[in-house]
Length: 233
Length: 233
Image (cartoon, rainbow over all chains, first blue to last red; front, side):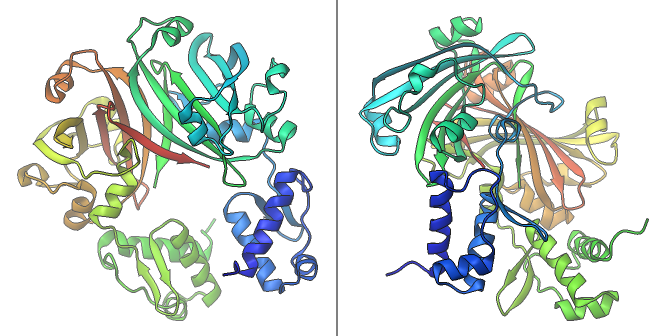
């Protein structure tokens, strides 16, 4: 069965954003132009744009047209970095330590990551907040999808903005599982904790605009003075 | 400055839902009827209904009209109970232990709860999943807002459905702060843990349809076999 016409329009625009043809902040064609170009009605083009807007990929500005959503380091941090001080303020974490190395993928990583990569890049980072080591974070990405990344250390503080700018990979969702666990040895050493002290472990799968799992990330956090903030509705 | 007209329509409908005049699942007046009744245009009535829909308070059914959103025990649990097994499945937790008692409010409780109550009701619960004690939960609510609740033990499993049915208090949002902490003595005893074992502490403020903080809840969870699931975008 052929997909509905508006889905074809959606896929076309997502493809252009993902490939970098339409860059962050770019103006999209009007509904009329899109319709003419892709051979669909203006109503179909409008339906596609509304769906893209509801996914957060584009933004409509009254009277000015539709633009590719701009993701700045600030909005990216705000969306995906949930640790806050007790009063809810967000302090930008400072990068204290970083390594990136290429290695063979584990079976679990192959199964979870898009493209079933044989090799991955593992990025290890320690972040501090208010002068105190607070987050130990290990990110795992496909070596084939991020060529040369391991040689580009030091990486920018905000990996997702870097993924987009350097690799046209746009993270739009993060599925997280949060647990309280005893700090393992390496984590405890890097964060200055006793082995077994409680840390907040956040296991993330980051999904890009093409609905591919492109990053696995485990962060372990000290939550004495901070907490993971979330609003449910 | 007078509020915009559509805001007046929104407030009127929220008031009717909160007071129970419009019950869960009830059909709302049409845009034309609402406009005539409240002296606003059909467009203004439509704008108000769209806003109420985006807040999740009403649902529009194509060709059938607009209805007050039905919150069943299942949807309520699904929204506000984020603990899942590793594969993402939700097991309904079993209530193992429950007490409710009236007591004086602490200064912090008075400051946080709507209405600055002098007296509160504290509900203590232990829940189990798959036969294992897993959550120790203390909920604190205003005694004035929930008259007689302490005498109604055993309470239904899903407190938010009970709040709505018995007190017309409709929880629509929960703001949570999640931490990893060492289990305090009472929590450890009730959950069968060693004192100091890591537990996932979730501090919640539950907000009702009138934007009032009506419940404070601290739940402490064992996350060996389960995790707090969340999707960020």
